[in-house]
Image 1 (spheres, rainbow, N blue to C red):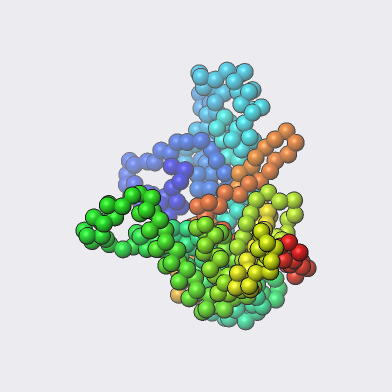
Image 2 (cartoon, rainbow, N blue to C red; image 1 turned 90 degrees about the vertical axis):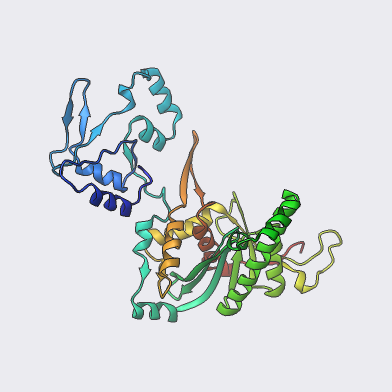
Length: 368
């Protein structure tokens, strides 16, 4: 039941709100601050001593019974196996799986739903003030079968604002194929069919991106490489010095580096300007921390003007981002998992030009 949403929980409460009914939820611990942690805190927190259950919470809410049983009581575990787990398991995994306890998960969700929900601005006067204070505008695009895009602005007070967001659907899933089309597709190989669908997706999403850029007129467009780097390259040719392809990895520098590739790799001859390529290379964790910091400090403003559905989808995708703690003997490194959190990725891309180091850096053409 760990993935049940708070809304679904309240629906369940209504369903079983009858005499003689009760809800029994079982599982391991998990992060503090979740629905299940709140229920545990309301309970009488009974502990097993080998003979009987003993309540430990004198301030329990009536009707809430809680039972805690760690692996120490498991017939399948020994003192040696438990000691080995404590030595080899990451701290949070050990707390959850072995001690069956709730752990302090501060930062394990860089943009939790309830935190970002509180950043949504609906007051028209506040929205007007935010929009009027924007000095720089950037678009972030996370290409995929379904591509997520964000339009962000930076205010004079250096606080980012999500102006608009949305997604471009996969045209191959949207279209209802007729029988002749299906028969034709079945006659081709799987590879040819995949290439055909991929090309259709590229053309559709590029068209949507061009329309968005022309409408918003941003200072920057930040996107990942897309399918075979084809998508950002076409946009770079149409919008030179505006569209940047983002590359990420483990970097020593916390701030992004900006490179213009304007020479042929083999001949080293200067390329025509329409063939220049623009790259923003950054440390993945540092990039993700930018958005997390603004969410934590409540300096990220999410505008909702007639886009409630898009905002809800956006917030749910932000919540899909996770932080994995990779432990070693020397240190604990934080790794961000945003593969499925397309909103998080698109927002991070859009915020890169707003880095404090951005204006201090000089961009040198590759090979200079």
